[in-house]
Image (cartoon, rainbow over all chains, first blue to last red; front, side, top):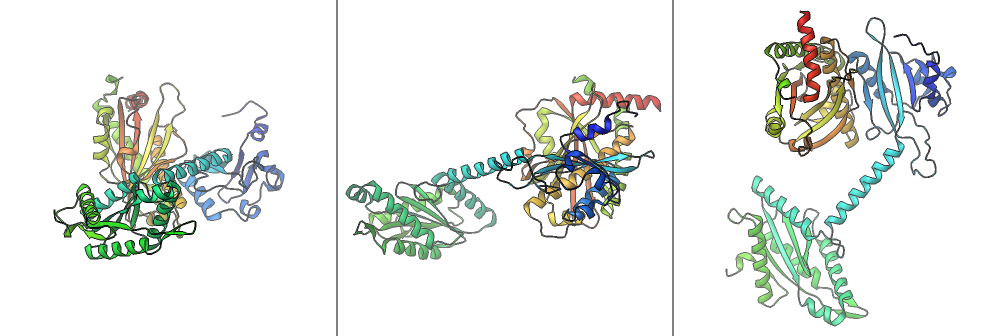
Length: 316
Length: 209
């Protein structure tokens, strides 16, 4: 292919990407203006020198691997900013608004064939994708934040009901698959309406927040607590049998009710009723377990509140 | 379009032959690159319709969770052209093993896992396409690889609600590397619109025999 256009060599300097060519020994054979104005080497400086001598900080092993695959397979290789942010640490045009201190780059390594159909050189292009990178990273952050908001109850910062239900469903199916055990606790603040009526809803909110903090302090990392609705909370305890559940339930009841919540300087006592159950071969599905814990919770309420009741001690 | 999609027996045999030889060469260059013996299965060629998409994919890739990388390939001929996609599918793959394959002996981070998947996919895909291209005296151009997903179910491999093709030609190649418990599948997929070109090429080559 003979190119009749006599300015082809200048064109390479007009390209709005970095373009350079190396041979199998990593000696530079071409270096365009785009690269020259972003580092200390002009084409005259760097051509015929080793790329690694000029850029000692280059990821050598990685670069060699890329070139090797192009030489052997005779087909291009690529690198993307998401996995490897840059080839050369160049400045970029968003020095003020970008919030990042280097140019994100996508690179392409393309074979240049000699007469005998062997790869004689490898052409590397360096494309500035800083704008895309910044936008993508922003989008990722936003998606993460939306996911978080979507799963959290704004008042207590515990999981909200729908997210907690999803977690519990997963846990129940895992328990079924591997024949493990899970316990479930449901609890409800005693006389919460009275607290709201007497001290106002803002104080009621504060009580719920305090309860959430106390529970979170006590529970193990693997236990999953959520706000089920109003003043009702739910916790599932993976790998925990009925005895363990009774123990945790009692500890929860104490940590919640042992300390009052203060309204200005008035100590307002709070208490909680807890119903709990544990999975077994006969009840092991989501609806059954919820129903059992609920039944036990009502039994706790009916027998005078401020206590923990196991489903297996209920008269059904 | 649908009628032209039926390959004659000659065309099919010839395509199979081309793929077989192409894969032999791809295996050779992969073995040189990875410095160990790479085995490629005999390519299995089939045509399936959009309506059978999911059942076919599940049969071709019978794994619960997969990681997949895609790449486009095309020729410089505009009309009719080949514009296909290759999908490299890793199922039950140990990334540490993959890392060793390209001489990475450090701890594998999430970004590195992606880089490894992309790199291996590009290598496998490049070797295969140049193997086939060599046989039909064509040159394929690639687009950069991108990750479809890691540990996804096969249903999420593509947007099955918005298919813009009726039939797809699929060439499936299985890879395994001797010293590693590493196996992956490459699917070369070409929609209706690309098959005309392939048929023309096959006819031309067949006439030259």
